[in-house]
Length: 605
Image 1 (cartoon, rainbow, N blue to C red):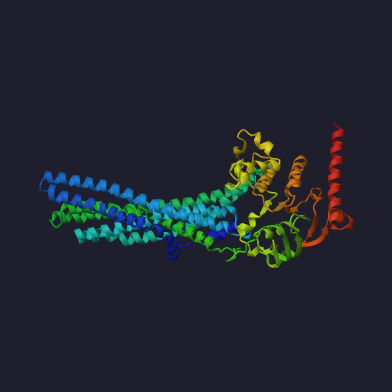
Image 2 (cartoon, rainbow, N blue to C red):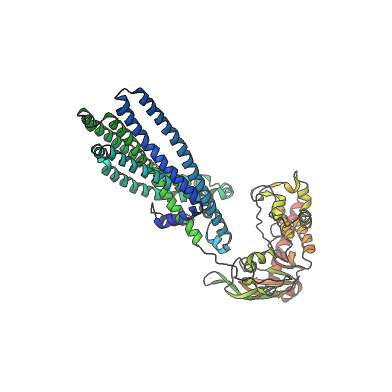
């Protein structure tokens, strides 16, 4: 994981990429009117910045010098008016810019979310959840800063610098040359700063990736860390990375601490040269005093954007990095697509057929090898075998989470690749061993917010799943809030809730993947009672390690190393004395041993 973070950050380098910028700006196209308003007020804001010193110049040379108090009052009012207008213009410009950016980033965030929902499971196998969350939340927010403080701010700074230069040349070109004499040196210093800031930024991003990865891993595995007494070791490991991150940020602070005072020094030097040269010009009656005062104000306003260079540069660099990562995500095309013209089944019966199905997650390493079997409507088929044999892969390709490499899977006689994915999956009820519960209440976790499921259907599903008595005893009943990932519920309660979810959607085909492997005997009996009623006239594929739970299946398929090794009923397979019989014998002996040990322990009490 750490290596992935580093490799990803290694691609970040440019502080500006025209191709990426053009692509980001496409999201502003629907809001071009708001953007036009923002840039109009940006120009007006630049105008207010230029007017203030010029009004000061007129007040000094035209009215103070002639002791014209009435004219001085008018200039004071004019200056106040410019300040008030500047406030209003800046407010409108800032608001419209931020509003536009938020609207555009909302669209981008929704596009990313929609794109992720279309990806196949193999994509999520390759990409960590934290990384995808960073793309959707943090990187998009960084792009928003590009509009509010980056592009618009940079254009505002450039317009102010250019406007001030024009004004100074217009007022007195000789004084302007004196003021701008230090600019070549400032540009060289800025270039030096940008180069160093880029190096520090790249290094800080890489270390931050390691810091986040280590923190996430430690928090996720805190129970293991505490159980084995590894707190001190983890503390030292985190401290090492944290110290590296601190040191690289201190380097950045040193560069900033050096850059800003240097700019201040050159600003002071420019003002000093202006006073020295301009004072001589005033004494020689070549320049009016108001011009010199206006120049001093212009110099102070011109150097402010240069001081902001550090912030603007970091924003631009972070935005380019974020945009590259976001567009890499969006450019990953959907691999499992709906057909152009999906086939429809008028009356769904629930038959399933596998025809010589092959599947590989990694090239050259097949996990399913020529799987062929047929499930009639209403038939219950059990899949058993050692872990990693391919049982879950069979259900995954049936749901079309992965596409097969060879062969075909037919649902009601139609290849799953010719079904609309959403329509196909609506016919399949999937109950997994690792139950996922969403934030919300009990009712929402059963219906998943689907308004097509009525209150009566919700309660009936809970009753059939044997979870209704538990829910109805809660203070808020079906509106009781579920904590994150159902942390306040037992494993058995979570699995019963997932059964209720499957029942509420009333699918024709049920897929039970180790649904009773992690519950106690009493809960397993409750689930078995619900299954006996539920599975009547319903097709079912049941994956189970506990062979006792699938004794009454119509047929049992023994999956081993990606192939069907044996097929038959429970009694037939036991009579064969093959792999299933050995598995059953081993499991029976293990359970009998547990029973004898428990009886022995009780006898000593």
